[in-house]
Amino acid sequence: MNKVIKKCPICSHKLGSYAINVDTFRIYKCGECGLESTFPTPSAKQISQFYDNYIDRRADHEVVQKNSKKFIDLLRKFGLTQDMSVLDFGAGTGVFSDVYGELCINYDPFINKEKNITDFAQLKGHSFDAITMWSVLDNQPHPVDLLNQLTKILAQSGLLSFTVVSNENEIPYRYKPPEHLTYWTKTAIKKILTKVDLQLLYLEENSIAQRSDIYLELICSRIPKKYHDEFYKLTDNLPQFVSIPTNELFCIAKKI
Image 1: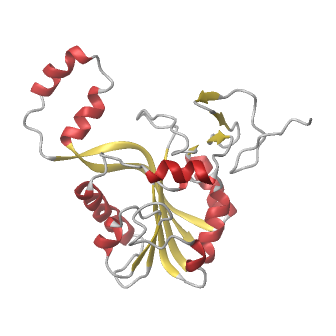
Image 2 (image 1 turned 120 degrees about the vertical axis):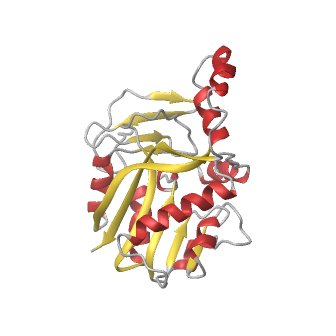
């Protein structure tokens, strides 16, 4: 039997034999663009089962609301206006569209099915002035194919914005298939944008608003338990929400 040659899903560079094992998956790093990708690709059933039970306590309603406003404010600097139509792809509970307004349509095949469009075919024939994907592109098994589909329903000069996990900043991250399937570099992002005829406008490390108690839990998870109580004493006067760095990249691009 011929051995299947594994290639980077972004630049098609042949992947080497070294990989990190995570459960039944293996994570390979591309020597060309630096993207880390998951093999074998999880089945549609595996992905659906994962999201059927998905809860992220770090992203409660008020946290997502604050960050949605922050992201919208940044997009306004690149031309987003309140009268533009927006598709929030992978909308989850729909908080982003609640913040943006009635011209934002939600798509998510797994979560909040009563509020979201769940069949991508229903989006064909539409034209959106902007498309957003918050922590979604790195969950997709075929990111180039997805962006090609999305650019077809993005208006000329329309904005496409997304966040993805970065594997090259200083904030720790965990390999989490089948949730995260790719882990990105700035080079990989630039390459995928070129493939789908999008012009890069903005690419920076992302920061978000988070509840201070949740952030403390995250920090304390990385230090010995015997130091937790003393650490908490030093942080008694923190505000309810703090701005924190993340392990994500924030990208804004334009259709050309």
